[in-house]
Length: 342
Image (cartoon, rainbow, N blue to C red; front, side, top):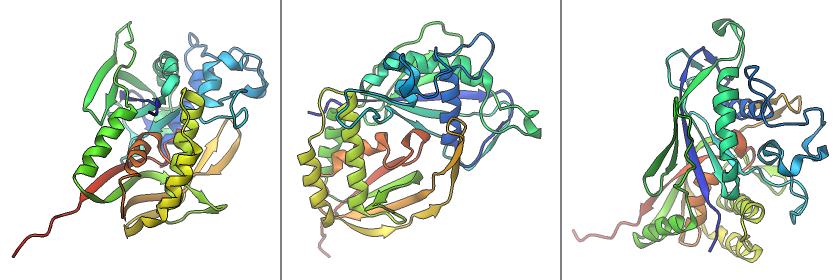
């Protein structure tokens, strides 16, 4: 059985100085987290966790093997079958409203999901957000916030499992003790939901893409959703996380088998739209496109074999820039209705 686990965290925060964000909020959250982990920003008492800030890149730093910044932001693993660069073991779940200006006293909540053994880095994440990111601020500088980044206060951090309905308070404002999350999303939970849906006779599923989803297929950008390339990218992402962060990789034979069957699933309703977005990386000093499709698309066919992986994808995300919040979707299923006599 797949041993991959997901540990979803929800940060409940209150704005203390006006926060100005662009439409792509996930990129701002991820960028602020990166600088907080490094110790580039924050109060004088906050040094972060990078002890070799003069290194031009993580892969050139002799300390990278045991560094939480390298593991979370510029993941390196010399033993990886696919080379030194491996997927980043987390995703960002940004606020989904259209709001981009947050005034003092308003809520600014966001999520972060850690995968498998990356849970060991949980204390670093908590410290970086609470002591580095929150007081240093996030977003743009403008007249509305005195030309400094908007700051916030961490009120509570929750671990949650949407499949079981369980949640756990791991940090409350003023606490000096952080509790390690103990409500993981496991493959057993995924299978239980999948089997329940199959027993109900699911005939179609709708993937509600909440954030821009950017997928390439045969070297071309996929402007409209299609089941086979989405499934292929999703399986590759799950396989890479399992390969590099667990003791049980996903077999390539299974991936080829499932992708080969994917042509039997068709689009029956597509209400997605394409959104153009640009994300600027201060680390790389360049802008990159993060455009993608958003909205609901419904697929129909014999879905039983695919359901576990589609359910997993709600937590792993799919496509490019998952660590910035892209490729996040929620799944809903429709059961086949039995014929009735009239």
